[in-house]
Image (cartoon, rainbow, N blue to C red; front, side, top):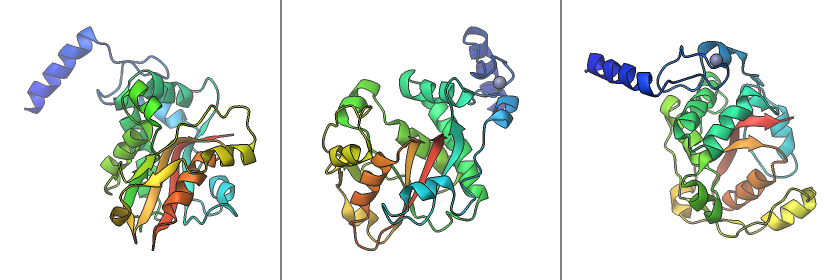
Length: 232
Ligand SMILES: [Zn+2]
């Protein structure tokens, strides 16, 4: 079977050349979007394994979290930005699985998240969901789960209101517009569990804060947060 599968892959490769989105090299596995060299060159933050890292500090005094971290730095015109563009705007779901695996690998290497029970992706609003057809955070969550074996609960938290564009708002204004945006539709599914809330990129943390705030209302819940990338 493996030989047949490789044959099919080679055949597809002939017509759909599979290139590294970082450097254009064609020396990469079928499911991957980056070659080994470009993976090595990604800017790892080291936050996943580090207590008191900058992502945890974002939430100090805002919401009660157990652990938080991001796998990579996000900078403009970087390989990481290109990879995230593939996931969010080019309908490239395998890119999201691949990126989720990179994050999942870091989480699995660290022991800090070992007592997490369930992975919950930050839900998208309906407008974005229907435009894109999928939730990028859910794809990343699935990638994490393929490396680090925890169930993904994609529909226990929902986004109820459409938020206007937040570009020109300060943190307080953003928080106001985020209030009441999320709801837990299946509280019994997450009660007394340690949730890992997952998103693609963290900037101000206001979306994760609002979503986390809603989740923390459920009895006995513990909350941790992981994102693929961190904006400097
Ligand atoms: Zn490459």
